[in-house]
Length: 319
Length: 289
Image (cartoon, rainbow over the protein chains, first blue to last red):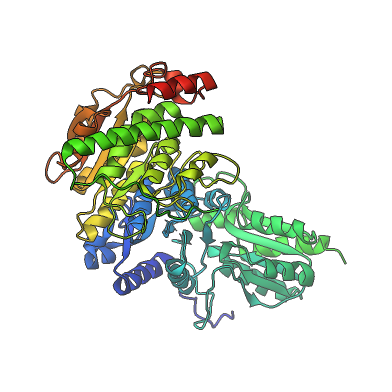
């Protein structure tokens, strides 16, 4: 970007979520939304106005919310559960495991405002463990889209998928990272830049920062491959293998704990292939109080922070 | 392995029969199913016979005489739903589903054996007639509320029944679901509490008190009915006169006895998951003949 470029437009992916849910519901009368006092925070005011009878607000009751969604699916409905990811995934975890995943219920679970979106509210409201918890559960597709276009396509893919899907819907403003012709597919990563020196694997709000790192690295004379990995499960093992064989050094970056998320998934795959240096970027533990953008800077989840990690794995890379 | 539906149905105990004949046949079915259940637990060396037996007459009455279900088409959309929230009573559910004709009763001998579809807790992806995968307590009632809301959205009068254990009501998720059930006015939803008074190791009232249970349910906005959970005639009459109050879901407190009617099991907490010895099986079978 040059000084003459305008600042990129930024988007709250919940807006794409709201518009897409309404589109899907208009086309398919089986669609219902189940939420827990989260009409406003899930941006469901428009849905409520258009489809009042198809909005099931169970109140502040996440366990019942997920169970009720399973029952609605049994009754032939296509439920979208929508609530703050921190409460939905922690409070409703056993229901997510048993009522949805083990039962193979056709339910899409939308974890809203994940990561450190509620920065100032502190670790009670941060959701930096959700992917780790869910990744341990069998038969659950996990999607972490990066921008409005990918969010919309991920939701449509989830609606068409037989079985439960978790979609993490970002609140923190992000720029568009995918071209208008982009086609999202469950289980498929996409290369946003080509490069053979190092691979940066990112999802969600971190994809734009991985692209920024690639621009900084290019100035260092380093060609970084940026791999957008919206599907944490099932992981795109072909692209991970290509990153191992063709670049030999990997950095992962996500708005999540360093334990058990995208980085954990990639590391598990890499050690089973041919071990190469991997750096996992994320939050090391409970984060302090601060805005989301301040926290991302504080923990070096920035283009510059990713660049430094890339230089580190490059230095340790086998010749 | 997945069980496939069987055509070997002994016939449902429908409304075309006189009430007295239906009650007689239900009592006979309960006797047969308890005998099968004993053999299953003995063969598996595992199970929850006490809670199976407290629930038997309720499950048998619902599945054989009350619910609109079709063993030849287990997933037809307008079927009534039955959710066994106390999933550890899988033994009685399997034996009753087999009696209904959902699968071959010979499969009951595989209960909890390696790779058997008839696991310790029911799995709807493997066993026709099972509506929900239950086991962790406090899951069935929220699921049943969702099923009933789906019926309301469809403008359907199909019914949803959920059998919960009494100790299970200590799980908070039930009370979330009780709020939702009355808020949505789900009059085609009925929860039946298997009120045997005992949880795994002790009476409910000595563990975390449930009484006054009927008052609690009323305060949560449910119509309440109480019945003898071992009286097929009383159960049949109650289930055919639902809802207890128009516009409200119904909360049935079915007074039962753990291990009923076997003399040495009845009302004894250790029979929650004790496995009877061969001599005890022989005695129990004599009492059930």
